[in-house]
Length: 278
Image (cartoon, rainbow, N blue to C red; front, side, top):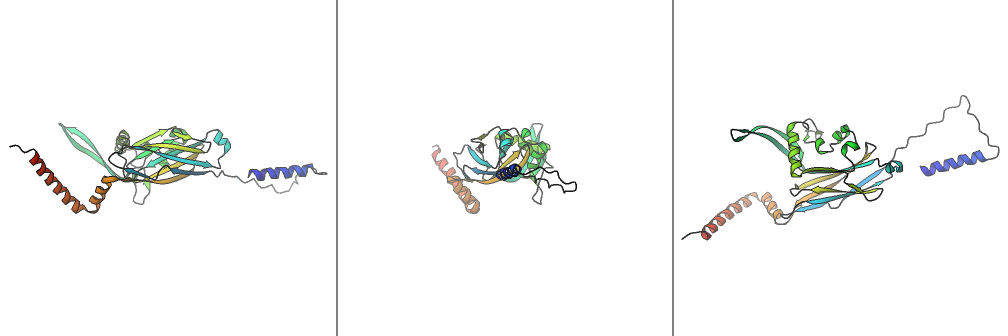
């Protein structure tokens, strides 16, 4: 586009400089020149993960996931003014959750009420180039479900996410509990630009990271407006003896139950012999 503009400008200057060339006033009834087309920036945005599979065994104490990405065809002026913002999230598998409220009654803790959420993320990690409130309006963040406070926990039967239960006390309690355990975490100013168009972000993953399919999503904002989005898939699986035992229990439930009972009987008998008193 810039090259075409320069060529057009050079041609115009050449015509004006030609001998006998004179400026002419437009005819009174001449049709107006068509307006120049509005050209939209076509930024491209791609991300990648440091790994697409995380193995969990008995020694797993948490890890960090590095998400890197690249921008292309950016507006140099906006880039110099640092008006491009990036938000990166890792959303864990969604599963049904029931939140119960308990109260003390003469020393006994009784269930007072409960609320079921059919699609609560088991984990959620977010990193952003700036605080979310400085990147986009609250309505945009809520629509995109960005941030722990805007995290959607319910999906309607048609598969669309809804937020009618987002603000009740049970949803807030679920978010608060998961924050305290590290399953939900977010940070701002933690995305590092290694060059003008390359960036990296580190997400902290807890020791009790749930297994299953996780989705990494990255959002590119320009002056408060979302312009691009990209996603990658991460699988968290059990490894080692835990994986073998879990698979056996899942596929051979009857045999697993019989083996567990026999192991309990043998352990009790062996312990009785060892600690038997004369």
